[in-house]
Length: 550
Image (cartoon, rainbow, N blue to C red):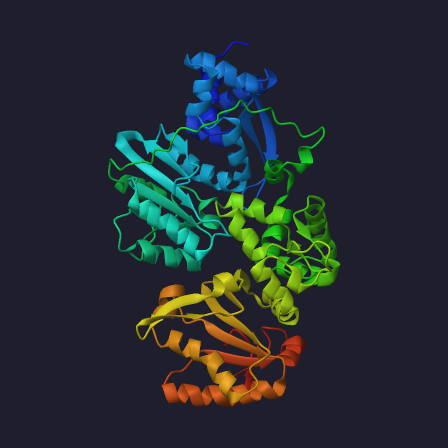
């Protein structure tokens, strides 16, 4: 097969950026759409490249292309180098392919950004990283350099903070584009880099992935403003450094991918191709809310129980989630599911298993909370009535919100809902059961949720309220959320809920601080819904209100 100009350019592009789709090839190569489509067809027919189907919630179903073993040999010949040299210089070895396939959902978002940048600054040279704090980097005309950092949904606060610290400690590109998972973590990351010299711009991944060059979604770390990518690149100063990674010890020729034959379904690196967007979303929700019932998961996804079963069954078939009988057939991620999410988000697989594994410490012993090895999974299973109550509240909220014109923008589990702050010279925290944000038009309503079962004495009630009094006595609620989130506290018992209103009023009066506090009990929430007239404030016991307050 004869290699012509466009085809040779596509081979080079796929060697630098494996798993591009055809529209991304148009942007990064500069060839017309017709030329690219025809050249890809010839390369595929000639056995030099192959395609796989892939889709995420943010990216529609598309064909992503990679070089075959024959394509790698042909490119090495075209470049005048040995196959071994090509495998070590480009991310096309078996080891690199496995890493990129495991990160494929993140890869799709990164390529979308790179494609947009290439339209604004052509030609662009792209580089992937395996261990550096950057996920990828681009070299642009005029000596400009741009790095990309993505925070995955499972990345915890301390782990991502270490990545940002490593970023500012090493070679820094002229501009760093940071994709964040949600608005709260975006604010935290901006604050962390606001006192550094890192020229960073932040955007939500869900907004950046489908954005056009003129969309004003990027926020600098030091200024409360939004700019578009075109302005950002125009202001990027020439220069900046890019990390250099050591040459890999191994660089084997990758085997051609095949979606048939023995063992292909058991390969972890194939899972991002095999799972549908709805199945990936279900896995993310189960990982956020371990031991969730099928009914509560349906509420969180906003679908029927029958539809949610269609998403869960493949996850069970691939061994990514399980429903142990000893846990009431509630859903939780397996070690394989945890590893899939951790590798996608470049977080520690070992740490994820230590915290969330549902494997048994003694395989011969019966399934019970004491025998679960994951520390946090064990705690949630031990307090399963409380865990189930929180899941039920959030599922009902997700179901009721659209009926009242609200959109559920964000729901965070306890590990992401906690807030740490300084008070009286020491570190303090609030640790709610959940955090969420609702939106209607331009109005945003953040809230913390506390489902309370143990605070039945006045002293215990005061202890539960004290962290919030400390938190709201500072500027941190505004810094963290741009508003003062409501604090929703639900009691199992109506009598305890009445006593707490009295205690809260006395504590707020003593501290001369008005908390945005709303209190209810299980029977009222079950009857009226989380957004119904089920809530009372310490300042007005006699007038039940709906949430969000009018």
